[in-house]
Figure 1: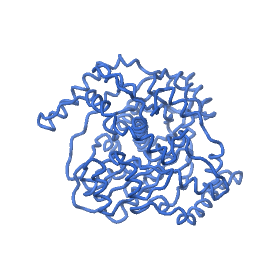
Figure 2: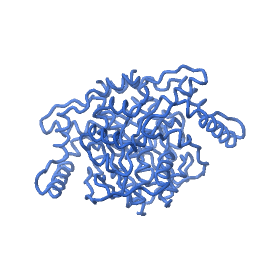
Figure 3: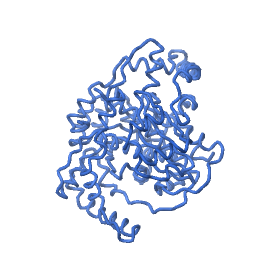
Figure 4: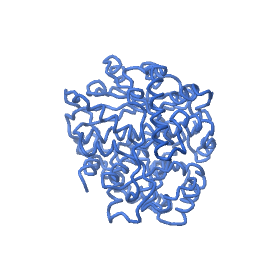
Length: 246
Length: 246
């Protein structure tokens, strides 16, 4: 194991940041690392909005369910899947193409995630901490309006970056044998026992971190989420953006 | 800049591999690094199928448009977005929940991409090379059948990993200022000039690498792709899998 892998295996999201800016040039390095990630069919569909305006940051705090570090982090980036840039360039070459296919939506979304994850690994390698903010999808139309995003562009997630002011423990993950199968998908019943144990590990993890206030296992958390039907407006929102129509 | 970032910035896809296995324990390290990536709302929706069966590999070569390294790479992994595991666990707790919402599809797909990108960075840090194989989505139903994937699981992409037997040049990326905007989405017209220059860079890159046989700029490539309407069956396929229905 080398330091890169060791660092990655120790990853945890940072939700409390020191009052300290990034050094000059650092953000550019991180974004160049992000950009160097693979891109599906070379589409390069990522657009990053760096939010420095504190009023916009405050609105993002509200939108994302009062995640205050969206305002306090040294950097807050909104990662967007962008098919409008391609449409614009293709139109200049004389082709009025459609970009509302599901395949295009998938590749653009993957592009964004690969770019962002490189940015995160690069940041962590410099001792910075990060937190993805999926919560900006709570009110995606408001985010589009705040950032002036045109059609065929949607905000996938936000990302806080800054110097950590906490060191939370590593959150346990599903047992590897339950999620890595050989040649054929393993029957789900075969993984039950190991995931039962895992549920107990997660429960213990929360118990210790919340002084007994919370003890939810993983499966129970998934049940609570499934009951909530979070962001059930998403398809309608994306259709309005001109995406995922067919 | 540190070695991790330098390495990431030098990334290129490897499509020719040495006839050499990974050392014992390496793949596990890579997958643990992958698993340590952030996961949206803790859903951990990634399932990885390690394909060691050479007949299945050969079928994957055909499916992915004759990409022969899918067979010759030391490892070939199929990364799947998996909502079936969660459904199964939640059902055992007594809840018959639906997992056909678009939001769930997005978070599961992002989860897979973050996991896979960590795996790639970990692999590259050990001197290994990787190539994503989006081409398995050419015939996703066949992939599902070959790997016995149940409903609510779809193959997002494959990944070849092995020791590189080539060192292709770094492919130029869009100019950073054209894709990183401050506080508000930049008018597309403002980026035209820099992307015109970029098109020339890409054209030169291909010209040099193909001894003049190909000189397509980025915008022109995007136009050719838009004309092809690749994988227009995707929505229909996903609906059949029980995904993305509303």
